[in-house]
Image 1 (cartoon, one colour):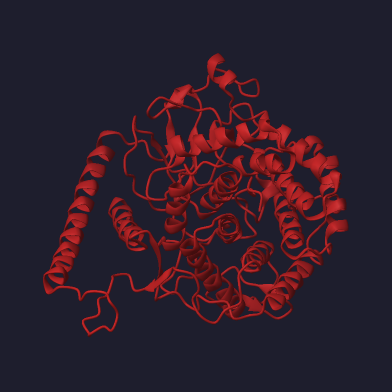
Image 2 (cartoon, one colour):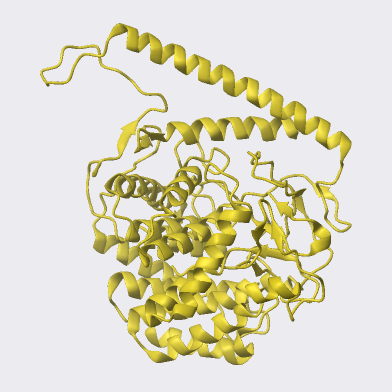
Length: 522
């Protein structure tokens, strides 16, 4: 397992470095169909058809005792996104029914998963942006107030406690960075996991109201991400434990859905302020997300068996809508085009239903997660320009740079032979150094493992073989825990392991959906 982790870390590092050359984003030649040739009107039609198919199948809030609560919240976000992107009010009345009904069933959007309740807040902010109806803003504020109870403030840090929890808080971690801004995942008294999913909702409410309270909250959350969850080279950990007895243990799993949420929140916050402090962080996360060899096949098509198909396209769409970097715009456009074309070519079945696998075979029956992920991928391409060729300044290239030795009519100088030799030798030296580093990391991890066997703190669960989640089974919760080092160190991506939780909130309501929906606004 350690060897595999080291291998994937090496591959990820090389991919990360080769995806950004001299400040320009490099679109790999291996990406399948990285251009949008379908008219925008057709993409909108496909999105509407997929949403309508979902509406005919999903249970509305209050319509069933076995309703998938988190799934409905996520679906509401997509209906609202459709309104924002198209200017149409097709789903306004549906949302005016769904969101208030959800709040009546769970007053103030109180839910065992804190981010689950907040997901309806995300839907409400998007609906307000689309329709400018104060009903949606009212519900967005209710959801934010619910989540705020579980977000650590500086006052909580000073006191060492937060009223909604029964344990002493970890005040600082890493380089003495405050834990303020982190939001607990669970509303239970003993839930200790902190994540970063509140940034987007706070930033959205600031965008709508100009209330500084929301801006300060968004900045605190962003600071928490950078200080405690960001592991370098675009890698974002899923959570960190906030109880003092846990001594800053970091859940170093890297999930696409968590990364997508972080992209959403940070890019929206960046667009609302004059600071450039998040620019490099956002660029690095975009590159890591799109080039992660564990999340994509050789054609650049997303293959993760979880729920990342919902969040990664949405997060990248938010970055696309808020950046002015033409190279980044073209790179994201190529990636989203690749996913859209795969969804339409390989996943689409009869009756506007979609398979979970975007590399085929096509769908033969309706599945809620698969449908929602496909809708997200289709909606993310609505802002893209229709073009049959690459646009902007992003470079389309193989993984290694190539050089032309033929005469040129331009004023550029020919590349000297010595320079070519230098580049080749330098590349070989880099590769050798990377391999040596991998071996050293592998050796160190083996020693560490023998000295301190504590990686799998699953509270009695047993390690299982990696497998895709069964949509008809209960949520399988992955915990892959390490102690957080006192300072930042480069950390391997790790291998996915599925561990069945035997404690915590009741997961029966999230049957078939797995991780709860995002705090992000898109």
